[in-house]
Image (cartoon, rainbow, N blue to C red; front, side, top):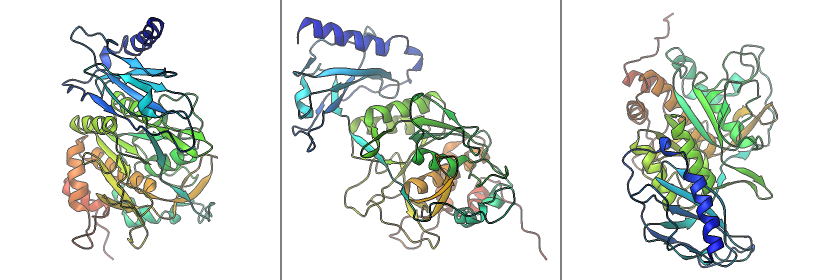
Length: 412
């Protein structure tokens, strides 16, 4: 590569890593070197994007020695990733080029992967607008069949998610919605509010008893919206570069539970990041997909992630991918809408949100012990048959396993 290009690249990478030593995660494993890039151009002729993973040297500096980009390739954004323990640089090429053509040569200790795309997994229902069924504290509560199935009213007598912290990696949730005034948006300051992220956030943490609409599963949990998706002609699209940044942000925000209601291909950079979070004691919950397919959906299919499929009010499993750890309510679910109102939707995205909300309640009840909360959740889960994945059970069953039983119903 020409010297001018080298200096430009070095400047990018220095800016990405400068002043971020405080964010590093301890006990970082080395980066697995090598490139995993397709030699085929995108069918639609779009510009390819790949990610460089460049670790620091023994002197703490990032070296570009041995790195050569292909003709027309350029670094468009970069940052330090505490979970990857390396600087992550996104490289774009000319329209119609193949990802492999963007990287001519890599440093011996560096890696390159495709900047894969991930997509939300919720489908709008025909009955888009719920009908108010009461004038009580939550007028749409009677349409939240999942709350009844999970025994939420009784569980809320024990905990409402106090002191639990949940990060939602998704489109930006509408933090100005009357149900979501306590939501913090981290990063993505210019991101457009999205329907999908608002639906997911409402299921987990919508305000309870405010006379507006619904109640969240963990209404007093600290909820953080981390925008990792952008609106395109193809719908909401989430680049791996942004998803990895969202996972880093979740760690920086001390999230105990991370909801990733997104589906896409396997990628070793994503695998490394979720494995690191799991090792650090963070529970990652992801959607397992909305289509019957022999192809696994990621990150849900990784063993360090809780992959959740949708079920209906009769506990029937909706179409999904082949790797499922848990089923949860995800069909005809009413939640908060980006418009400020409410809407019905279905999909494994919403099932994942129910599982994340349940984990938040159990984490609160366990005094912040995510491992105990996870054991209680799966220990109480119901299995219809030996081959069927377990289903999310009434939360009082799991709370009893934590020594926090729900109040007994009065006898008459």
